[in-house]
Length: 378
Image (cartoon, rainbow, N blue to C red):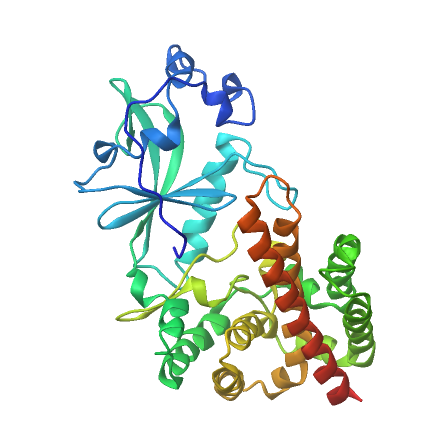
C-alpha cells in the first residue's frame, strides 16, 4: 500500500457520534440493544488503532487511507475496512454491501495472490472495545491480508532505478496463465464490443469537457477525441475479431506499478472488485495500463519490452496494433482522475497543485499516443 502513513493518535479521545462515520442511519444496519449507544461514543477508525484490537500481537498499528478505504497495518498483516461512501460507480453505504464487496475482493484477488488474501473477518464489540475477529454482533468487517514489503513495490523499485527486464519477464510469466484461466462468457464479451468501448470514451470526454482550458488545452482535447473516434471506426473489424478470439476476459482492471510487488514472488494485487464494468474487457486494455505507467515514469524501453514479450508469450501479435489506442485511453483516465482532485475545493492547496501537474502530464501523454497512433493507422 504505497501511501503516506499516519502515526496514530492517542487511543482515548473526545466522544463523537459514529454518525460522522456512517453515511446512513445507524439503526438501519445495527439492531441489537445497546450497540447504537456504544457506537455513538466510539469512532471506528481511531478504535482500530488500538494494539489490542487484533487477533495477533503487534507492536504498532499504522493507518493509510484512500478515498474508499481505511487500511490498518500491523506488524505482519494489513486489514482493509471499506468506507461507507457512494461515488456513483461504487456504493458501500450499507454494512451488507461492504461485507459483500470485501468477499468479492477476497475471491477476485486470490486469482493472482492466494497466499496474500486470507479472510474477511467481523469487527465485533466485546466488553466495550472493538475487536477484529471473535464472537459477537458484527458492527463492521475487515479484509485480512499478509503485509507485503514496501521497499519491493514496483514503483519504489523503479524510483531507485533498479527495475530491469527480468522483472517484466516475471510479470509476463505470471499474467499469461492468469488471462488464459480468467473467466470468459457472452456477458463479458459485450465489453469488447465497439459500442461499449465508445460509450466508455464518450463518458470520459463528456465528464472532462468542463476542464478544457488551462488544464486540458482545447487542441489537445480535440486531437485525442479525433484519434479515438477515428481508430474505433477504422478498426471495428479488429475489435470484433478479438471478441471471437477470446481476448475479452475478466481482467484485473487496475494493473499499474503501485499494485505490483516484486518480492520473493510476483504479487499483483488490489484488482477492481466494486464494478465489473471496470474489470471486464480486452486483455490488451489491462496490459496497456501497465505499459502506459512505465512510459509515464520514463521506462519506455521496458514498456516496449513488456508489451512485445507479452504479445509473444500469449500468441497475440494484434495486441501491438491497438497499443496506442488503449494507452491513450488509460493515460486520459489518469489525467481525468487527477484533474478532479485538482479542482476539488476540499483538498489541500498543495494536493490540488500536485494533482494539477499530474493531470496535465497525463493528458499530454495521451496526446502523444494519439499522434503516434494516428500516424500508424494512416
